[in-house]
Length: 350
Image (cartoon, rainbow, N blue to C red; front, side, top):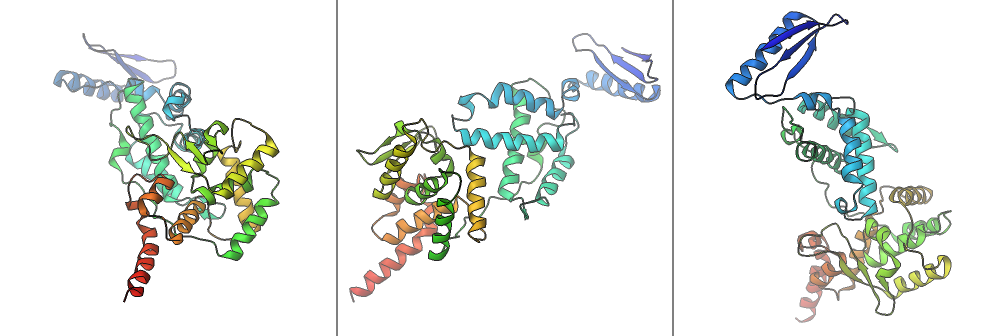
């Protein structure tokens, strides 16, 4: 049965009570609007299709993000103890909160999410548009938030998960950017003169070992065995239930870098004790000072794998063991080097 009450604000509050269902209430500027809403609720209850949206209406995305950070994102088991991943989540959540935090979960639909996606795509940062891969990760974080609301907070979403109903930016294509000798010399010079003492060793380790930025930053001294010339990566991007982390062989140059770090900073817990964004900004500044265009820290990994391929004595399986790729598909772009080497072998036999 529905009841209606005129509040001091001049708005009408409608209340719907039915045995076996939670009480529903909502305020409207007119009594007729309150009656229309109450009639719809009662009709849905009678048809057996009523779903309460009160929690979703009372909870803003900003509220949900705060709870998600406290109850989920801060727990090590949920980001596999990778500080770089935790930091990436923090930035993604902040962007979402700034743009959509004031909206209740009940009103966030495909149109709002599509607008967010398009607005982010037209946003400039450091003079360049935000990359599709960055926006894609933020959209999937939004989807994770809606799933968290349903599964962990027991909040019924009247629209379901709206992220599932929109198209997402595509995956980034593999980059092939490499520096020429002059560019590499300038970059290493700028890294060496940087005020951040960890920039140069981080860059050199990336080139020597084909490690990802997050893997380098997560590396502890207890994971480095200079006697056996190996380093153990505990957590990696391509981990699954069967395979966790990998063992990386150390080059002589990498061993010297580790020894230099030990002499300079001692046996601290982290080999490179920097936050992800600290390393990002230091590297970006060095690239700018060197006058280099379109080059990222991740391109150093491509440089390292390209050098391995050019050696000619590493098979694809051996390269995969070094790089941590779980399939050979991602290494195919380096295969042209092997093809050229094999062609020379075939020619020499004739």
